[in-house]
Image (cartoon, rainbow, N blue to C red):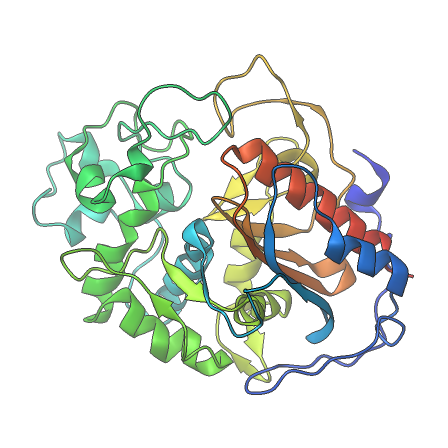
Length: 363
């Protein structure tokens, strides 16, 4: 592993933690213990194939720097696509704490009457844990990499119904297959458990407490919250969610998300193998390392080189370059929206280099 992976290379800030529930505080890079020139270079970072619309860096809850590209402004809300999966992960943890869901080993079939719970049917063995770790085994094709051929099931207008209709082709829990259909299954779980849509539940237990009452979350044609995508928010609002996780689910003295859930879901249990966990991209040295070009299965490829990033970092990522990155070792959150070219290699490369540049600005 590279130097930054395990050793704490980034000195902690002397800034007292701040929670921007209703107002944001801006500090200078010097006040945040960061180099202004290097931070400015990070915010202006714009490699080929990327088009940033807004990016902001927070340290201990304070805005240290941000950049917007007209006509996009700090008040503009942007679709986040799969960034919403991180919010859905938090909701499951809250529902378990509140005893609305027994645990992650709960079978999903009980929440979908059309499936039924037949012990002889492999779909009855799919649990919440499998859906959150993209291990349901349901037949699914989804590849955002350059040159990917064949259908992309994530482009379906009815992703949940598509997932519900699919047969199991691998025993649940035995194989990771990046599938937006898997977290789509969580909407029925949350809706039945809470007695309201996932979005309505989120307003009460997650979004409201941290001052995100103005964000929107899309629903499908049947009124079901799209737990796999669809949150629209400003860059600053996305950053609030990252700040919540930076503080292990605590928001200004209120434990919004259980701390043990944050620890459990956002940190790799095996840094040598794990890249994606409970709907978060984890373990940046591996997840953003150089991939073996001979490997065709996303999340199943051994790296040829590790990225020089903290293993404790993690991020939510949406297509075309939407991102919330949490870097606990430095007390930093980075939020970014854009409209990059198609090709997940571009999005991954941008995330890796942006995080590195921001960390390089820490004095």
